[in-house]
Image (cartoon, rainbow, N blue to C red):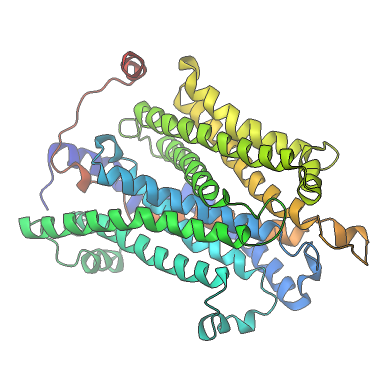
Length: 449
């Protein structure tokens, strides 16, 4: 395929990344594989010895695994919503970042459900979930919704990659024959004809229109697993929109962090410019304010109602001797810090926005943990066995090893995918030449607007 001047420059800049698996990539891949290996050993012990080697018991039946599941599924929905909405609105500045968002969507949807499997005591009966599903169960709804959403996300990503696969096919890349053949197969004969462009454009628009409401519906279904349970802090009508908003919020932070890493690693400053961080920072600030409002509403109504069971959970969250410091960190780092960083012009820089995103994402993971554990540690009926290990939850090294293995898998997938496709999509710039946009003037321009 023929490339314009800007496309050729962009492709030449990223070409070495997909042509060679360099030492740095091998080093990071080996590091991630070591963590995954440790997680594999922990999983082996859990399967052989059972859940007794975890912190989960009859009372606190969920812990790190469910928090990780909600977190990864959440950021996957955010990638779909951000890429889908920006595609539908034809936002011009979306082009360099849209592939990263789509990759986050697919990779997170693969990893998230794995943590649900870690909570199952009888993996040998997993197929019963598909052979004998209970349609009245919210968990069955969740399985069906996630599978549908995953299929839609893969199709959306593949449609966006077809044009680039054709570029790789015709570029005479210095890659193994199997890789060149793979590009040829995946390009499905795309030649850039008007008819092919029109079909891909229509398909992309349809998938973008479907993927956004599907992402919202799926995360709402996930929230109903908790909202339809008669437990303090869970049985709430606000959980649906609260989960959706928190998912998009945390996903925006992960997208900013991924942009910052790729910009540093592959010297993409000319393409992932300051304005992309600032625009996403504005989105993060608005989402943070809305998330703060939902958080305040959730705990205000529970505290003011003063129901005994709800008050017990809120007391644990406000008590520094229990979860008070965690709760404080989740709200300061998850709400106040990102808003202040983006709202103040002097701190509205890519580095500080990325730092704020990191602490915000960590804080929202903590918030997921606080949704799960304090509630399960507050039983409605008096317990006959009050041993601390049955009343209180404390994650073991097995759970932490599998948690870090999941994170390592997330990074490993990103590393591998960046060796097969360009992080900045080449085909998105088919009708555009490079514009000279001095980086130092961006903040002045935005401030003037």
